Length: 248
Length: 316
Image (cartoon, rainbow over all chains, first blue to last red):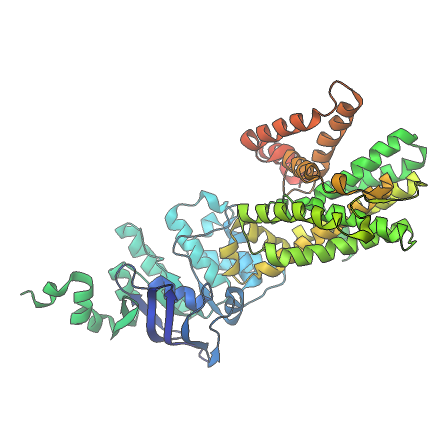
């Protein structure tokens, strides 16, 4: 059965600040959805709401028809939805293999057997190209490697819907090309669905089949990558009103 | 657990086990004053391992651990004095009280992190004294004095067995799946939650175990001194001494609390016997803790593991 994450009319207020105002979207297993928008538009907040890090003020989030909004984070992971952290949060005292093994032991796979979990971790690290670092302590990793480890951990949970928060940020053009190649390859192999929050346009337009644009907590556009970049509302949100009417 | 997994528990657990067995076997021939000293050492080791569970393993620094010890002591004094229980049953009662208290306190305080948790536990420890002072059944502020017919060997064996169980429990929860969960929480609690770890439940579980053993140790302590007295039972120097022991020995390690107890307890006893130095032991302990925290954060065991590669596989 293909699993579907549905977000409908979700709101999140922080006191008077309306971070997310009635956003709806859906992610199906196997599809990659890009989520873009200017700084502070509520993208990361939306991911946190889905992942159970925060509770929505209003609205409904469901997985395969079952409501999951307001559930604690660990239960949402058990259901098969896992999120990376914008700033990687590896367990610094552990090796990369152990980091991913934790995900395999406690995620939706719940591999109780330690040696099996460590094996799974080895396979996942190979998928993301970190096999050479499997037994390095994660505090020794570079920023780029830490981003990959974040990705490896969500894969390790066995999640079918991944919420990826800027996993392509801060990379050099070459590293970005490699990362996009790796991501596309792994996505094809594992077949997960993903909601990808990204500032790097090149990355998000390449990896996603469908893009959702939000501004100030509201959805302003929705469509294929090409449709979205040509949408006047999107151009206005990113570049200002003059850009829409400027002669090209 | 099969025989092979019992045999493969590693040199540290073997070492501590053999040490405790030798101690237990030779106890009947140990002269009285020395037995008192060793019993005191074992009580403190039990307290240090107890604090090590929540502070060393999970990373939640508790300044109020004396609460569990004190109420464990009062539980024994009340059980033996008012209910005529056997002291060993009194120790079990102390453990049960420690467990129940930790569940209750933990449910509220474990929501706080870092320094806020430390402050919350400290406040509870201070408040607890004033609550006990007003309870008529617990001596109405004057404490409970027991009939001092204490059999030193019974006290000794009770604390020896308690400590042995506690070290075994520490080993068990640092290995296997739950051990990974605990290490993850210490590493980054938010990341742990988003990988499927029910951090709240694991923290409460470890804190409850911690309260249980501190309660038992407090019970043995009260038995050993024949009573429970408010101002000395709730003394914050107890909390700080436990903390000093695990910081000096090596927080979060299996051997560290024992080494730390020996390193703190024995010199303190020497200080106490020399009139000129008596009372200065806390100054010295304080200085040593500051130096360790600043320059050798791993404590004795952590530092040995870091600089001597041969020890890395052996010492836990």
